[in-house]
Amino acid sequence: MAEFQATVDDEQAVKPDLDDGSGTSRRRFLARLTGAVAAVGAVLAGWPLFRSLVPNVLYEPPRRFKVGLPERFQEGVTFLDEHRLYLIREADSFHAISGICSHLGCTVKFSPFSTVEDRTVRKHTFRALGEFHCPCHGSKFHGEGTNYAGPAPRPLKWYRLDVSSASGELVIDLSKEVGRDFRLVV
Ligand code: FES
Image (spheres, rainbow, N blue to C red):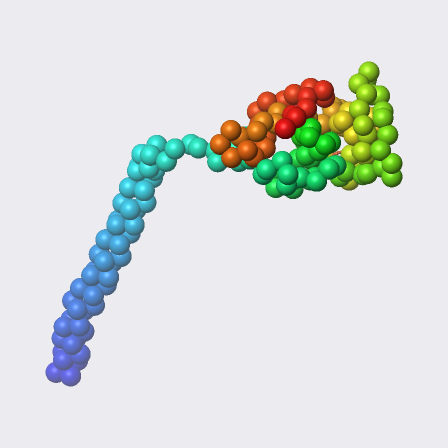
């Protein structure tokens, strides 16, 4: 009996310790959970404020840029791959044609003729050095940009060219489209 009593007393002596231990871990767990919920709540509540401090700016490449001195460009057609533009030089006269296909925006390739010839397209006569072909769906454009085959719905765009008064470099302005008779003479 004394032995049994001793066992019961031992269990009673141990039980409060177990309760204390699990209660402490439960409290600790609940405290951590509460902290985590509070942190998530704070982030969610503060997000609109944080977002309002970050400007909604779309970083796009500049629409007007220098491409170099006129003498840098050889007679004929130069592709400016960084800008997807063709710069055409005929003696002292320059013009710029977009290399972006008017169908779905692939880059058109210049296909040179073996001989330069005068051509008339839509009542406009020009020296044809070659023509532009789109590798994606087969559209074709005359050398002055007019579409004549394939799904492209419109001609290639022409952009305004100027000379920088500060550096003498050619400046292309993508915000200003020009007609097919535009020429910059330097
Ligand atoms: S993107 Fe040029 S033909 Fe389709």
